[in-house]
Image (cartoon, rainbow, N blue to C red):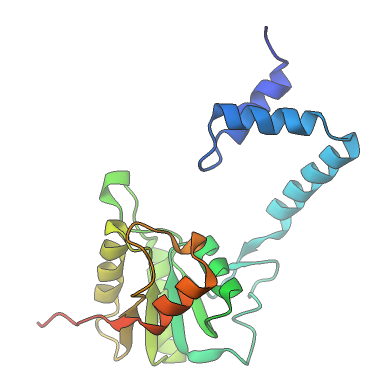
Amino acid sequence: MGVPDSIDRLISLWSKFPGVGEKTARRMVFFMLGQDPEWARSFARAVSEMREQVRSCVECGNITTEDVCSVCSDPRRDRRKICVVETQEDCVAMEQSGVYEGLYHVLGGRCSPLEDQEIPKASVENLRRRITAISPDEVILALNPRVEGDMTAFMIQESLSEFDVRISRLSYGLPVGGSIGYADRMTLHMALESRREMEREED
Protein backbone atom coordinates (compact mmCIF):
# COMPACT_ATOMS: atom_id res chain seq x y z
CA MET A 1 0.00 0.00 0.00
CA GLY A 2 1.34 3.40 -0.95
CA VAL A 3 1.47 6.38 1.39
CA PRO A 4 0.70 10.03 0.61
CA ASP A 5 3.56 12.00 -0.96
CA SER A 6 3.67 14.39 2.01
CA ILE A 7 4.42 11.49 4.38
CA ASP A 8 6.98 10.03 1.98
CA ARG A 9 8.80 13.37 1.75
CA LEU A 10 8.86 13.81 5.52
CA ILE A 11 10.20 10.27 6.05
CA SER A 12 12.92 10.98 3.50
CA LEU A 13 13.86 14.24 5.24
CA TRP A 14 13.81 12.70 8.71
CA SER A 15 16.04 9.81 7.64
CA LYS A 16 18.82 12.35 6.97
CA PHE A 17 19.22 12.92 10.71
CA PRO A 18 22.42 11.38 12.18
CA GLY A 19 21.80 7.80 13.31
CA VAL A 20 18.24 7.73 11.98
CA GLY A 21 17.33 5.08 9.42
CA GLU A 22 14.18 4.75 7.36
CA LYS A 23 12.32 2.65 9.95
CA THR A 24 13.03 5.10 12.77
CA ALA A 25 12.10 8.02 10.51
CA ARG A 26 8.80 6.32 9.67
CA ARG A 27 8.01 5.86 13.39
CA MET A 28 8.73 9.54 14.01
CA VAL A 29 6.48 10.66 11.17
CA PHE A 30 3.58 8.45 12.22
CA PHE A 31 4.02 9.67 15.80
CA MET A 32 3.62 13.24 14.51
CA LEU A 33 0.61 12.18 12.49
CA GLY A 34 -1.07 10.98 15.68
CA GLN A 35 -0.54 14.27 17.54
CA ASP A 36 -2.92 17.19 17.83
CA PRO A 37 -2.74 19.50 14.75
CA GLU A 38 -1.68 22.43 17.00
CA TRP A 39 1.31 20.38 18.23
CA ALA A 40 2.40 19.83 14.63
CA ARG A 41 2.02 23.54 13.88
CA SER A 42 4.07 24.43 16.98
CA PHE A 43 6.76 21.97 15.91
CA ALA A 44 6.90 23.48 12.43
CA ARG A 45 7.06 27.02 13.86
CA ALA A 46 9.89 26.05 16.22
CA VAL A 47 11.96 24.62 13.35
CA SER A 48 11.27 27.68 11.18
CA GLU A 49 12.13 30.14 13.98
CA MET A 50 15.35 28.26 14.76
CA ARG A 51 16.55 28.55 11.17
CA GLU A 52 15.55 32.22 10.95
CA GLN A 53 16.89 33.40 14.31
CA VAL A 54 19.93 31.27 15.14
CA ARG A 55 23.23 32.23 13.53
CA SER A 56 26.97 31.84 14.12
CA CYS A 57 28.80 34.27 16.40
CA VAL A 58 31.03 36.56 14.33
CA GLU A 59 33.79 36.15 16.92
CA CYS A 60 33.91 32.47 17.90
CA GLY A 61 31.44 30.71 15.60
CA ASN A 62 29.19 29.46 18.39
CA ILE A 63 25.39 29.54 18.05
CA THR A 64 23.67 32.80 18.96
CA THR A 65 20.68 34.96 18.12
CA GLU A 66 22.85 38.10 18.11
CA ASP A 67 25.98 39.02 16.15
CA VAL A 68 28.16 38.22 19.18
CA CYS A 69 27.30 35.30 21.48
CA SER A 70 26.75 35.55 25.24
CA VAL A 71 30.15 33.97 25.97
CA CYS A 72 32.20 36.39 23.86
CA SER A 73 30.28 39.40 25.19
CA ASP A 74 30.58 38.37 28.84
CA PRO A 75 33.35 40.45 30.52
CA ARG A 76 33.62 37.87 33.31
CA ARG A 77 34.96 35.15 30.99
CA ASP A 78 38.64 34.24 31.33
CA ARG A 79 40.24 35.72 28.21
CA ARG A 80 43.56 34.06 28.98
CA LYS A 81 42.24 30.80 27.47
CA ILE A 82 40.62 29.90 24.14
CA CYS A 83 39.09 26.43 23.82
CA VAL A 84 39.03 25.20 20.21
CA VAL A 85 36.27 22.72 19.29
CA GLU A 86 35.20 21.10 16.02
CA THR A 87 31.49 21.86 16.08
CA GLN A 88 28.89 24.09 17.70
CA GLU A 89 27.47 21.00 19.40
CA ASP A 90 30.85 20.37 21.07
CA CYS A 91 30.89 23.99 22.22
CA VAL A 92 27.43 23.64 23.79
CA ALA A 93 28.47 20.39 25.50
CA MET A 94 31.56 22.02 27.01
CA GLU A 95 29.60 25.07 28.16
CA GLN A 96 26.72 23.11 29.68
CA SER A 97 29.17 20.93 31.62
CA GLY A 98 30.18 24.03 33.60
CA VAL A 99 33.85 22.96 33.79
CA TYR A 100 35.31 25.75 31.63
CA GLU A 101 35.16 29.53 32.03
CA GLY A 102 37.28 30.82 29.14
CA LEU A 103 36.47 31.68 25.53
CA TYR A 104 35.72 29.31 22.65
CA HIS A 105 36.52 28.99 18.98
CA VAL A 106 34.44 26.73 16.74
CA LEU A 107 36.39 25.40 13.75
CA GLY A 108 33.30 24.32 11.85
CA GLY A 109 35.09 21.28 10.44
CA ARG A 110 37.96 18.84 10.84
CA CYS A 111 40.78 17.26 8.87
CA SER A 112 39.48 14.02 7.35
CA PRO A 113 40.99 13.13 3.96
CA LEU A 114 38.90 9.95 3.70
CA GLU A 115 35.70 12.02 3.98
CA ASP A 116 37.16 14.86 1.90
CA GLN A 117 36.73 17.28 4.80
CA GLU A 118 38.95 20.22 5.66
CA ILE A 119 38.91 22.97 8.27
CA PRO A 120 37.52 26.15 6.71
CA LYS A 121 40.45 28.48 6.02
CA ALA A 122 38.39 31.46 7.17
CA SER A 123 37.95 29.84 10.60
CA VAL A 124 41.69 29.29 11.01
CA GLU A 125 42.42 32.87 9.96
CA ASN A 126 39.81 34.13 12.42
CA LEU A 127 41.47 32.10 15.19
CA ARG A 128 44.83 33.66 14.33
CA ARG A 129 43.24 37.11 14.35
CA ARG A 130 41.69 36.52 17.75
CA ILE A 131 44.98 35.32 19.23
CA THR A 132 46.67 38.46 17.93
CA ALA A 133 43.94 40.65 19.42
CA ILE A 134 43.43 38.86 22.76
CA SER A 135 46.96 37.48 23.40
CA PRO A 136 45.76 34.46 25.42
CA ASP A 137 48.15 32.42 27.56
CA GLU A 138 46.78 29.10 26.32
CA VAL A 139 44.88 27.56 23.41
CA ILE A 140 43.13 24.34 24.47
CA LEU A 141 42.34 21.91 21.67
CA ALA A 142 39.13 20.12 22.72
CA LEU A 143 39.08 17.77 19.75
CA ASN A 144 37.57 14.30 19.59
CA PRO A 145 40.08 11.53 20.46
CA ARG A 146 40.25 9.82 17.09
CA VAL A 147 42.50 9.94 14.03
CA GLU A 148 40.68 12.93 12.56
CA GLY A 149 41.06 14.77 15.86
CA ASP A 150 44.80 14.08 15.87
CA MET A 151 45.19 15.39 12.32
CA THR A 152 43.12 18.46 13.15
CA ALA A 153 45.19 19.13 16.28
CA PHE A 154 48.50 18.99 14.40
CA MET A 155 47.11 21.20 11.64
CA ILE A 156 46.01 23.84 14.18
CA GLN A 157 49.32 23.58 16.01
CA GLU A 158 51.19 24.19 12.77
CA SER A 159 48.94 27.14 11.91
CA LEU A 160 49.72 28.76 15.27
CA SER A 161 53.45 27.97 15.35
CA GLU A 162 54.46 31.63 15.09
CA PHE A 163 52.56 32.62 18.23
CA ASP A 164 54.10 32.53 21.69
CA VAL A 165 51.17 30.71 23.24
CA ARG A 166 50.86 27.41 25.06
CA ILE A 167 48.90 24.83 23.03
CA SER A 168 47.38 21.96 24.98
CA ARG A 169 44.93 19.17 24.27
CA LEU A 170 42.30 17.38 26.33
CA SER A 171 43.71 14.22 27.83
CA TYR A 172 42.62 11.61 30.36
CA GLY A 173 38.94 10.81 30.58
CA LEU A 174 37.80 10.82 26.96
CA PRO A 175 37.60 7.33 25.44
CA VAL A 176 39.41 6.83 22.14
CA GLY A 177 36.91 7.12 19.32
CA GLY A 178 34.45 8.95 21.55
CA SER A 179 32.74 12.29 21.02
CA ILE A 180 32.88 15.43 23.15
CA GLY A 181 29.24 16.10 22.34
CA TYR A 182 28.19 12.95 24.24
CA ALA A 183 30.65 13.13 27.15
CA ASP A 184 29.28 13.72 30.65
CA ARG A 185 30.34 16.52 32.97
CA MET A 186 32.82 14.44 35.00
CA THR A 187 34.49 13.06 31.89
CA LEU A 188 34.94 16.54 30.44
CA HIS A 189 36.19 17.86 33.77
CA MET A 190 38.84 15.11 34.02
CA ALA A 191 39.88 15.59 30.40
CA LEU A 192 40.21 19.35 30.88
CA GLU A 193 42.09 19.12 34.16
CA SER A 194 44.50 16.52 32.75
CA ARG A 195 45.14 18.31 29.46
CA ARG A 196 48.69 18.10 28.20
CA GLU A 197 50.81 20.61 26.35
CA MET A 198 51.53 19.71 22.76
CA GLU A 199 55.22 19.56 21.90
CA ARG A 200 56.44 22.04 19.33
CA GLU A 201 58.24 20.67 16.31
CA GLU A 202 61.85 21.71 16.03
CA ASP A 203 62.87 23.65 12.89
